Each structure stands twice: as C-alpha cells, then as structure tokens.
Length: 342
Ligand code: FES
Ligand SMILES: [Fe+2]
Image (tube, rainbow, N blue to C red; front, side, top):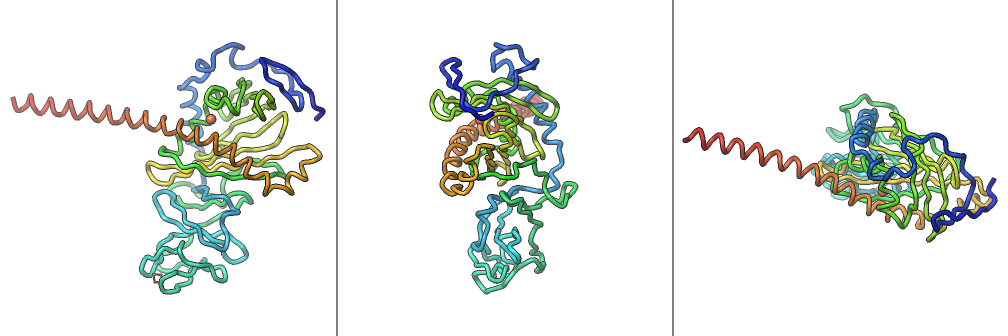
C-alpha cells in the first residue's frame, strides 16, 4: 500500500498511497476556485459552526508549556495564570492576588499551590474570597479552561477524534480579529493553492454537507514533490475547526485550529498538529519528536502568519462596513437636525 509511486501531473510529482477514484463532486471540473468559494456558502457554514455548543471551554495553550513555572494568559479580556497543581492537574485562575492584586504569574509554585510574590499567600484549589480557580482540562496536547458561564456547561470540552499514536506540535499566532474570522478562513479551503502556493498545489472539493467539507489536496513536501490527500474539515465547537486526513499519506492525522478570544479585538490562533503514519519508521519519528516538532511548527506558523492576515482583512472589512453605516446614520441625523433648525 505504501510503495512509492511517482506520477507526473502538471509538473507536480505525486508520491504516497493511491487515493480512491473520485465519484460525483459538488463542482464540475474546471469550475474556477473563486466561483466555488461562494461567500454566502462560507457564511452559512460559519453560522452552523457558531451555533454549536462549547460547554464554556476555551483553549489556554499547549499542555507541555504548563508546568511548575506559572504562565501568563489573557482570555476574554481577563488576565489569568496557569500552573500544574496537586497530582499534576492543570490549574487556571485569575492572575490578580485576592490580597492586594499582585500578579500571581510572577509568583512560584510550591506543593501544587501558587505562592504570591508580594506577601506569600498560597492559593490552590480552594476559593479565597472572590478568587477561585476555573475548571481546567488537559486533553494530553492542549489545556482548556471553562471560563464562560453563559452557556450550557459540560464536564469536558468537545474534542475531535484523534489518532492513538501521534507526534504533536502546537503553535500560537495572535491576530487582530474575532474568533469567527479564524474559523471563516478555514471554511474557505479554496484559497489554499492561490494564497499558500509554497504549501499547496491543487485543491478540489469532493464533498460538502451541512457539517463538513472534504477536499482532495496536493500538499507540497518540497518543490514539485507533492503528497495528495483527502482531508475533512469540521467544527467540533464554535471556536475550533479540525482537519482530519481521511486518505493518503498521514491518514488519521489531525490539525486542530482553535480560536481563543484574547479580548474584543484580538484572537489567539492556537493550532495543534497531531501527525500519525502507518509507515514502519513512524515509531522512530515519535521518539525523535523533540527534533521534528520545530519543523512542523515552522510550517504551521508560516501558514498561520498568512492566514492571520486573511482573518484580519475579513475583520477590517466588517469594521469598515460598521464605520460606513455609522457615518451614514450620523450624516442623516445631522441633516435632519439642520433641516429642523431651518
Ligand atoms: S498581594 Fe498577594 S499576598 Fe499580598
Ligand atoms: Fe490558509
């Protein structure tokens, strides 16, 4: 199944497992990508994603970065601190000390509690006045916190199906936009080959439903050498879009893109790649994960620096529309006021 085969197609050299023959596809071959990338369709898919439950959970960051040293985070306009508590449990709590407001992220961890740098108050799982840690969950790759009480709360976040053996890498890119702009970007797979020609060569949508979109895409490994895969995009919650490789090299691998609101105008894109493979050497790759992780992160970051610009542009367009509406309504009110005076 995994014997190397070369196939030349429009100066691309494809390698890896053969993919199943394509049946009926939603768009006729040759339909230009800009015609397929129907903005109304993308908005409908986004509305369905945003209507999903989240259980009140937000991704805080990579689990491996939360440890004995407290880390600073800002989510939903709140300053937070995270650390490892008793029995290695992730802890996420308000960063301001309940005594006089010192930043607990500047403190230290002792016996699973965070110790305030100013007067030594040790805080853990127990409430102290108005201060209390938030429910936190470590899914093995990412740490989440349940920060919103406005939704139906669930005991744990909605996590997409993941491979059992994987090499994981997490990146973070901040953008001036809302979480919906990040999801909107990924609900438009048609931009891939045009906007990221260094990474994608060809893309074809092979099925679409209310809940997912499946594409056949040529991923550039190096120059003309491409790995062709079938990949499914779906949103397990309103701030996450996951891509799962269904067929081809790396079958079962998942890329989860999480959009965590920093405040009203900024969003953190936290993306976890969980790469897997049936190839016999994959066990070696997993054991060399510390060497390979930076390579995965470098490629993912390059894509997200570009996609953050896309998301920021979508946000900017919306802001321009709001500003224009405000100018029109202010202009109308001004004209009504001057005619009233007259
Ligand atoms: S400000 Fe934290 S113990 Fe005083
Ligand atoms: Fe992109």
